[in-house]
Amino acid sequence: STDAKNCGACGTVCPSYPNSTPGCANSACGIAACSGSFLNCDLNLQNGCEINGGTDVKNCGKCGNACPGVANGVQACAAGACGIGSCNAGFKDCVNGYADGCETNVTNNLNNCGACNNKCAVANGTPACANSACAIAACAAGFADCKNGYADGCETATTSDLNNCGGCGKVCGAVANGTPSCTNSACGVATCNAGFLNCDKNAVNGCEVNANSDPKNCGACGNVCPGGVCTNGSCKESILVVGAPATDSWNNDVQAKLASTGAF
Image 1 (cartoon, helix red, strand yellow):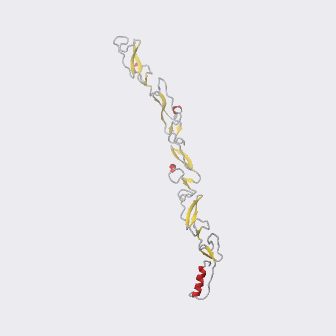
Image 2: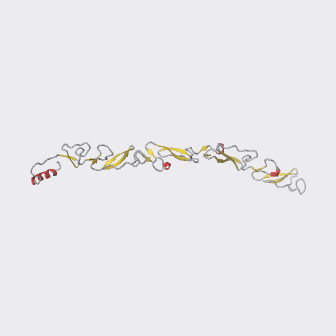
Image 3: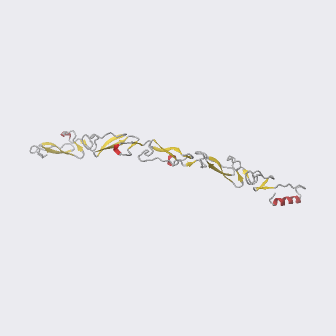
């Protein structure tokens, strides 16, 4: 009554059915066990254990156990357990697994941009996530992206950068008799060369005053020499020597000695 090689009668051998081990019960041939993860869901001996319960989404792990659909994706059955087979384009499973499916839209998510846990951040600015790629949404006041895009963020301080003063590519040019500056996003004069002054505060003409010789700005802006003579940045008295022709040695001697005092 139970011998698969003599089932119901001597010499009656039970045949093998697909994906199963033959058996004999109550003198009738049948299936003793299904192989591996296979299942006999239609109870038809001829096709044996016709369902692979390890991968069949309609009979996952057991007959009739259908895997529910996956949000923004496709369900799957692996090793007899329901799960996520694949996510639709632009979506990923970043939290909770099969429970909430492919819940994250990685095309525009700042914390999961293009992939789970890929967080967008921008130096001196605000990040953005567009088409699954991190980008710069905006730069903070006084900063700009003048070089490498998102890689180094808003790297340039346009308030003080001589080559990008007030905006990318706005170069502060050379200053006459001095050096240029960029302050509060505007080009200006940083320093004047020795003996020169920027009295009109105009960066266009630079350090326009020679303080060593200008009697209206002698040694400092606005310092007017009463006698109208400025030498080496100091006001001097002026003197006129009147006499015989210039070849007269006495006149020349007087003029030379007065000049040598440094007071005239």
